Structures are given as structure tokens and as C-alpha cells.
Length: 274
Image (cartoon, rainbow, N blue to C red; front, side, top):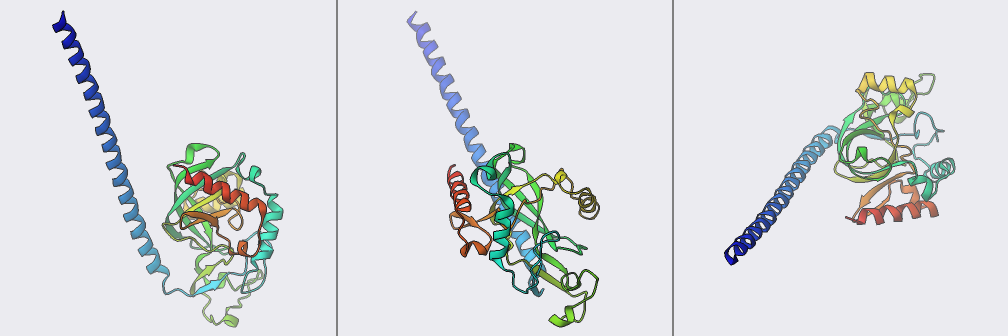
């Protein structure tokens, strides 16, 4: 009788030991897998950054005088951050609740840039991002690589210094050849670097005009399945600096907005949690 009880106890102890060992191996294997993926991602980002930097390092930079193709423009070489922010904050009717509720807010890592050739109005750059975390909205994007676009990018100088009638004014700015390649930079949206971590609100491409959807599909192979535009990059966009996220638009250094501060604090609270 005692022998049977001892055998059962031994069998039970062996079972527990095996379970713990298997669990430990599984955990270790998962850690190794995660480490391998992280190293692979770092190597990819490093290679992409080097390739992009080599592509743009000798290209002259022009401060693009328009915010985008649909907004009002301020015809100066230097954008007025404050005017754009006031307009954006007023139009968005922004508060902490409306920012998160029923909207898709993501934290992502910038993986790669791609030149969007042939954009006559509003030069932009195609961006591949990895969605690390969905802060608000459906979780289907979490862990996925998706496409979006940043304002500014490589373009021909004629697309920057031509008016709506097609008259070229580049000569007034030192560019006699209208086909000179330049980098159009939007001061109200300093372009994040490859490898940077961001927080922003994205929308489904199906909400954009049919004409633009067809154009993007034909020219850049961007569809509602892989492309998610940023809702308002001048206002609703944060970038990680040090261990905190802060608004990307430099204009916030001159304009303090209570709702933006509340959203920023909440973003940092969420992102501080593992």
C-alpha cells in the first residue's frame, strides 16, 4: 500500500517537474524568438536609414510654402506655426475624449521611406510603419506593417515654385532648371527619422475621395488594405524624445493648449505601462 502511494507521489512530482521544465523552455524560446526579431528589425532599420540618407544627403532643402493641397496656404518661405495650429485646433474641436473615443490611435515605429514620384501638388513621402500598440480603436492593426504618408519629400523644384496657372517662379529662388530635384520640407511637420517612434491618429483610406484612392492605387499601389492616412499631422502627431512623447509641431513651443497637454499626458501614461 505504502509502495503504491509512494509511486503515485513520485509520478505526480515528475509530472510537475516536466510541466515546469517545458514551460521554462517555452518561455526561453519565446524570449530568444523576440530577441531575434528585435535584432532583425534593428538591422533592417539601420539599412533603410543608410539607404535613405544617402539618397537625400546632397539634395537641396526648400521650406515648402503650402501646408497641403486642400488647406489655405501662407505664401511665405517660413511657415507660421501659430496660425496653422490655431486653425487646426479650431477645426478639430479637439478634446481628450473626442481624440480617443471611436478613433484609431496608434503607437508605431518608422521602418522605411519611399519617394512618391509624380506628385504635382503637395509633395509627400510614402512611409512604412510597424504598429507596436493600438492605444484606441480596433486592435486589428496591432503588430502589422502598414503604409502612411508624411508631408514633404523628394520632388522637382517646378512642383514647389509654380503657381496654379503653371507659371514657373523658381528663377526667383535660384533654380533655373525646373526639373532640379529638391527636398520639400514642411516646417510645421518636421519629418521623423527612420527608427523613430510616433503616436498619431489614422483613418481608413476608404474615407478619402474616390479620385485620390484611384490615383494612389495606380501610381503607388496604395489601397484601403495597406494604406492609412494620418488624420491631422500638424496637430495630432507625437514623437518620442528621450523617454517621453511630445507634439511634433514646433509651434506648440509657442502655443500651450490644455487639451493637447491632457492628451500628451495620457499618451505618456499609456506608453509607460508594459
